[in-house]
Image (cartoon, rainbow, N blue to C red; front, side, top):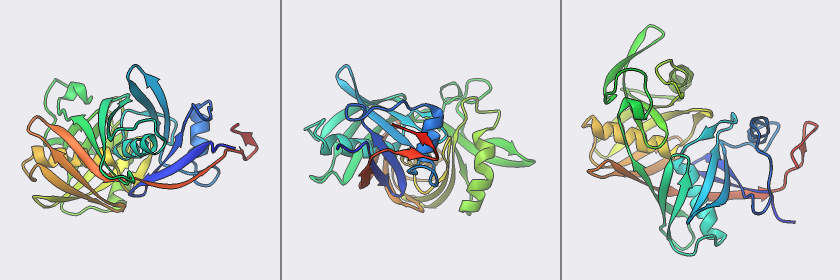
Length: 283
């Protein structure tokens, strides 16, 4: 029997790949929530549903564990690129993947497809493109009030929205405290991802992450790109930045035209078949 899903992680940020060409499933929000539940389901930070052929490109749909859709995921895209290469959906080491957040270019760095580089696209700080409420402007080093406290934030989109908050000290507790408040703040009509940013030096930063629809995560590719992009915009780092997270480290490179390249590992964990969970049949 062919496996119904395969599970991978990128620095502890784990995703299930469900290939509709092998095994299809009706991914309703309640089904996604059940599958991603770490007690009643398989457990994951999201689902990668694909490949789906769209013109010349291979499409992936990315779902958050709360059942909502994600436009992009840096870790998810590295995982999906590894899956495509390992299963010979692509034979060359450079290829394109279609996402809700646009087309990205993937490059397999080694024969085993353990290290993958993704062209994540171009960063924008324009409020209407993120989106952020208010007049059209670059949302850079703005004040945002949360429960009576004021924070300096820089917001941007790299196909999905991010709010970066520089701090002298960051930790998991702060991320979990501020994350839900930032994600659902009235300034962000489509909700938003949040990163707490600590600059170590001009080539290294550290972040803690709260992902829209997923919560606190050990690592995130798009969050790494956003935090590095914001730090670069603020003049705090150079154009090549090592991003340190509890799950590990990723390399982000920023061009003069604000294009962002993300490099890091992807690891297969296991594969399996769906069965009944808590009396609810997923087959």
